[in-house]
Length: 70
Image (spheres, rainbow, N blue to C red):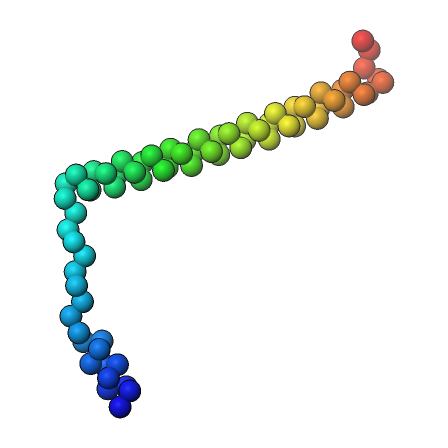
């Protein structure tokens, strides 16, 4: 009985998603492009932060190294 009810419910018509207008499609393309650029920018900032931290550590180590003549 429950199986039959599920089968009937599965055959019911589902509403179709609304078609995108040309403006909506363009907005979607622009949004995807902007999100991709934002992801790249965030990655560059993260890499720059790590490089800055590494250079800071190397500079601190070179200041502490007694083998380096001043």
